[in-house]
Amino acid sequence: MTSPEQTADLILRGGRVIDPESGFDSVADAAIAGGRVTAVGTGLGPARAELDASGHVVTAGFIDVHSHVNGIAGLRLQALDGVTTALELEAGVTPVSSAYRQAAAEGRPVNYGFAASWAMVRVETVAGVDLGGRLDRLLASLSAPAAQQRATPGQIAAMLERLSADLADGAIGIGLLVGYAPGSGPDEYLRVAALAAAAGAPTFTHSRDIIEFVPGGVIDGAEEIVRAAGETGAQMHYCHINSTTQRHIDRVLGLVGRAQQAGSHVTIEAYPYGSGMTGIGAAFLAPERLGERGLTPQSLTYAPTGERVASVDRLRELRATDPGGLVIIKQLDEDDQADLALMMRSLTFPDSIIASDAMPLTWSGAAPDPMSWPLRADAVTHPRTAGTFCRSLRMLAGPGGPLGLTETLRRSSLLPARLLQDRVPAMRGKGRLRAGSDADIVVFDPATVSDQATYAASTRPSTGIRHVIVNGTPVVRDGEIVAGALPGQPVRAT
Image (cartoon, rainbow, N blue to C red; front, top):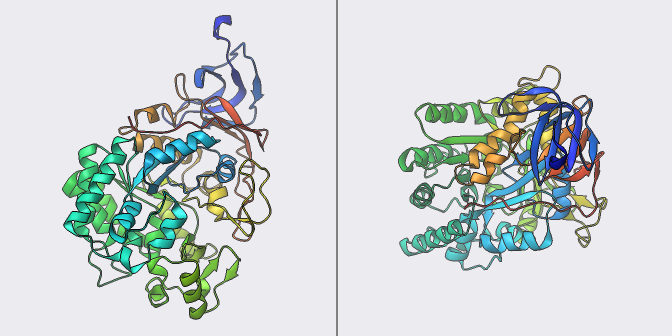
């Protein structure tokens, strides 16, 4: 028990406490003070406040290593899915110092952090476009012919210098949207991987096209990641492996497995959806390239209007007028058992991390005040933004689920923390629930936890999430957003 001089700020009372690291799983209390867990046990007290957790699971908050959401409204939606840390690592941003300053000035409901952005640095260096650190500008510029040129040795040197500066400013790693820059050379990718290895920083890659999609490509995208890990020793993280491999997932998982067995530091992530989302101007969505992935214009839904793209002519028009406009891409059919099995294989691969690829909110009208809640009805995104982690719990840990509860939690919190903790030692306090860990905690009802967001209603919050605590402060209490709660802190390399 805590002594009077150790009065807790908050006690979560009587829940099923699960620590993904130690395997502790028992009905207990969890005491919080000063933003940390101070004790886990029975009969803890006293405390200034208590929250009832009986009948609920109490565990480490979910860490999303692949979130493009950098606004309060979207991050609240993620908090209602159990997320306590949301990181922009695949696309990244530059300069990272500005991104951290802006997030700190505005406040965030969950913890936040950024990788350096190879794609932004490349577009600005090779194409001469000022992106201002904005993802929408990046998506609108990537397909421009000037951005697809091979970089000269001088340009590569300039890019490496800028990426080095961002790493020195605390970037978590380097994000590489190689799949959006097919004109870049494999030599450039290896140079960036070598830079990351020298800095002890992980990389986060949206792979180049795999050879099944582009038989005449300069290199298979999966082979490129594995080769970089082997040749440079870099920590290579393979982003949304299900999205970039689709029906060829078994071949790529086999390759990754062999690289891991050989000692290469290659990790993977996946999300539990068959459809992706990106800017409609992406190179692989050019009308003449849709057939590579078995797509047609009708496979695309343009998010700003909700329209199914009707024709090649309409696709060309949208790519010309709004190349950064977000579009949902139907890749696998979630209602088809064979396609569902493919998706599940990426999620259940040994130590596969669950990550959302959460997307920014699109509004049909002017964006509202960032602190307004609930969300206005015209907000649109991909359902993975609102539902990835609770959907994973339903599919992987529900009745008959292939992983079970403890393993699904481990892939949602502990494995992401371990992925980053060598570069960011503060992550050793996250992804765990024990005395001394950060008080980033999710409390959910295992009987009712589930996603509710659909492609037609993409911003419906998940159900079953009772409380979400970030740095000791509730941001979700009794299933509702806590107005004004912005306790998120930066996750930054030191």
